[in-house]
Image 1 (tube, rainbow, N blue to C red):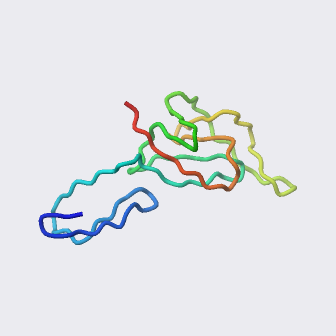
Image 2 (image 1 turned 60 degrees about the vertical axis):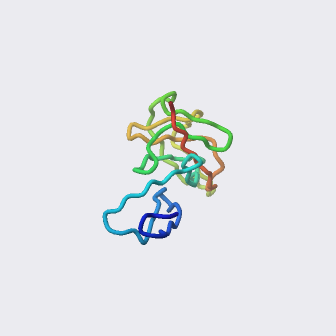
Image 3 (image 1 turned 60 degrees about the horizontal axis):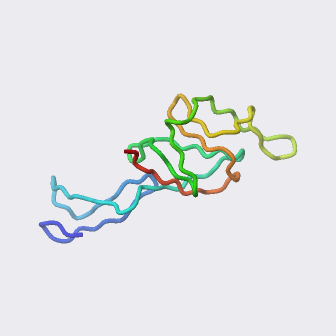
Amino acid sequence: MEHDGGPVWVTGLDGDGGISVYRLPPNSQIRVGLDAPPRRNLTANPCGLLVVSATVNYPMDTIQVGNEVIDPANLSTQLRPSCRTKSDGSHALDEARPQHFKTSGGDLVVVGKTPNTRYEVSYIKSD
């Protein structure tokens, strides 16, 4: 990447989607483009819920997890049940949730994932 004052250094995306750029003169501006939808890796909890929260870099919008595209506008709003450890060491939700849902706090919750497994979540801009 070049800037009027010479080369700059880009380190890539951090864990929250931020891009770090070094060696710019003070108060300078650059234009950054991405060729692919933003994405991040999240881990399903021990009960198989993948909780996707909005951040500054990842506003809540349509997402893709694996081959499944999920639009939060089409989901019902529900409470997220607690995930508790059972006497045999396995985990279970206090209340079953058979379908994806969103919470009143704005989280999107994907159900039925493999517990404690990382998933790539892609953010698809809706038109």
